[in-house]
Image 1: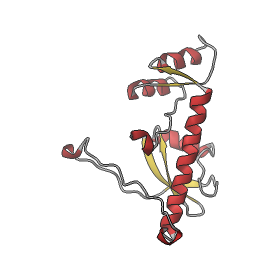
Image 2 (image 1 turned 180 degrees about the vertical axis):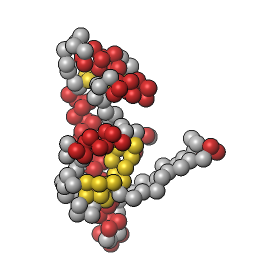
Image 3 (image 1 turned 90 degrees about the horizontal axis):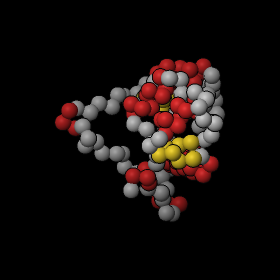
Amino acid sequence: MIRYALRCDRDHDFESWFQSSSAYDSQVRRKLVTCPICGSAKVGKAIMAPRIVGKKGRGRATPPPEPVAATTPEAAPSGPTSLLMAQERELRAKLKELRDHIVKNADNVGERFANEARAMHYGDKEHRPIYGEASPEEAKSLIEEGIEVSPLPTLPEDRN
């Protein structure tokens, strides 16, 4: 998975994850990558610093601090920070809604996910919405076979 910092033609900055750089290129060509703020499909990569973890630091990276919602209007930050926090909360709510919709309307096939996806792709089983578990290697193998898969969104509150 690759995380890109992106910017639309109206100078809105946002991030998105892609299976590979070619998946990003393909989705941009098909106008599937749009700005979450204004909806523009004129999106390009923004300059970003790489995240490098040395050998000693592997497995010990700490997640960024969670934003804290202001309890009173006086305590609310003003300017771009509050706008970004509001946009992040809105994005998280939409991701949760998407995940809840998938869980409600698809069959959880658990560890059989890769086998079930292949069976449907090759016509051995009737197509239906499924979700489940797959190792990174299994997911990569499915993608290499032309089987479209996507991870369910994971939100910070899921880590608790």
